[in-house]
Amino acid sequence: DAEGNYYCKGRIKETIINADGENVFPDEIESSFAGLSLVEQRSVLGMAKHAGDRERITLVLKLTHEPNPDERAGLSDDIRRINGALHIHKQVQDVYISAYPLPVVNTIKIQRAGLREQLLSHPEAFTRLNLLAGKDFRDYPKEYIEQLMADVRAVFANVLSLGVDSVNDFG
Picture (cartoon, rainbow, N blue to C red):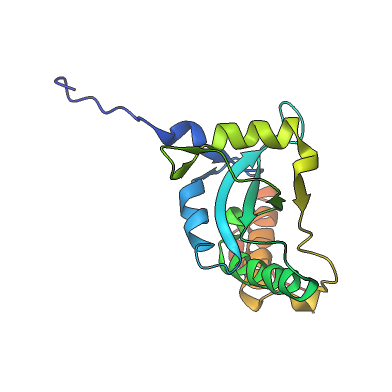
């Protein structure tokens, strides 16, 4: 404004506060999943399981058609691969496939508040895609495991009031 103040407008209410209290921006994560085959619409939003809980990063997809088992497995693999490349604090925790088109504004932008309401009021219209089915620890990308280990070391160092370099891995 004329006094030199800045104001946040628009999508700040869509910012997800994850379990670690970090701000996560849905558009950034959503763009990572832009190249998924079979996907007609996609949206990332924060969903809290219970009032007062931190939000879980949730990906909702509307597919071009009902996938056969091989297509569904391929889609799951692609989502796991993309998700594994994201920083651990930005990784999608839940994935749902919608039976109906996602609500839009001006025919293009997904209306996240409307989608959240649909997920809460009509859960039967969504199928949860289990990304962990049949996964073994060794199946996760090396980068994911390294980041997870670094995060655990940082937590231990913080709790024990040590430098991160003072915390070593066993084995």
